[in-house]
Image (cartoon, rainbow, N blue to C red; front, side):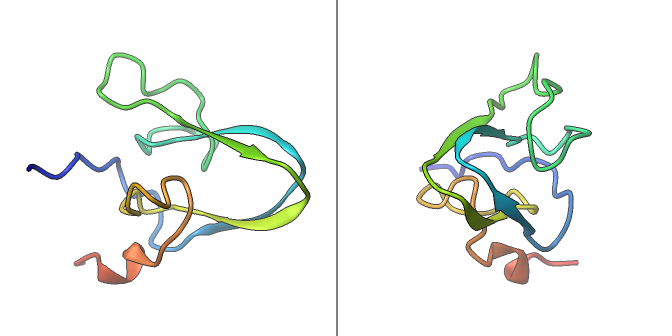
Length: 85
């Protein structure tokens, strides 16, 4: 099985943010100018944003490196610590 293509790493750390309840679209391509959220720059590419529904106000660590595994998806899992320079 081949590994899925990773989007562009925008930073080697998470985007830690206080989030309010709502629906958010995480940028999976890394090309958005509104990081970590989608602004549509993925169009005409193999990437699609990931829909995240937050039910209550909380602090979230959004993935900034685009290397988190599928189980975490839009959220940081520490994968940025394993990226070679």
